[in-house]
Image 1: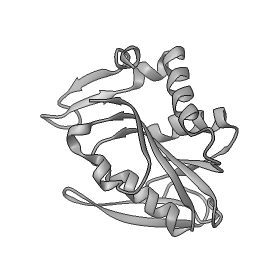
Image 2 (image 1 turned 90 degrees about the vertical axis):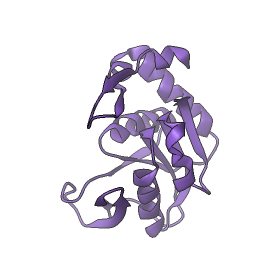
Image 3 (image 1 turned 60 degrees about the vertical axis):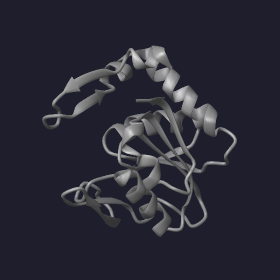
Image 4 (image 1 turned 30 degrees about the vertical axis):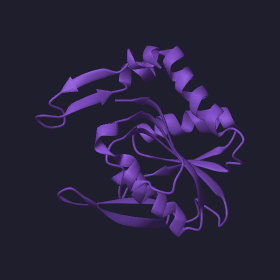
Amino acid sequence: MNSLKQLIRDIPDFPKKGIIFKDITPLLQNPNGLKKITEKISEHYKDKNIDLIAGAEARGFIIGAAVAHKLGIGFIPIRKPGNLPYKTASITYQLEYGTDALEMHKDAVKPGQHILMVDDLLATGGTMAASCRLVESMKGNIVGCAFVIELTFLNGRKALHGYDVFSLIQY
């Protein structure tokens, strides 16, 4: 995975002072890098009887849709409120300072379907945990939570206790 790490750029003080943002844009721009992350995540979950992949905007859309294509299954977008055109189910969750919300179409998951959750980065796990609860509120079964990057020092796996968590690159 060192070759993939070389394609991730550090952006100091973004989005605020003291944070080093892990920018996957160079990784996505590199055809071999994008192919490798898609293949590695797909390989890990290929025999798990997944019906659909769900990903939160924006980078979860990119990675999730690529993995869905590789596995030959569909994709569910999870968005911030007000961005989906049909009837939605929503969830509100706590942030360090305040709350946020996510939505998906009410008909996106049928009861009993097996859903793989995909995103670019596991930090504290709050957004992914909320996304999982949203899918579960529609009676979907979470197969796992897959990430390109995991910031292990933030202990995001703790928020995802009970789920299969898979990450390609750890910092």
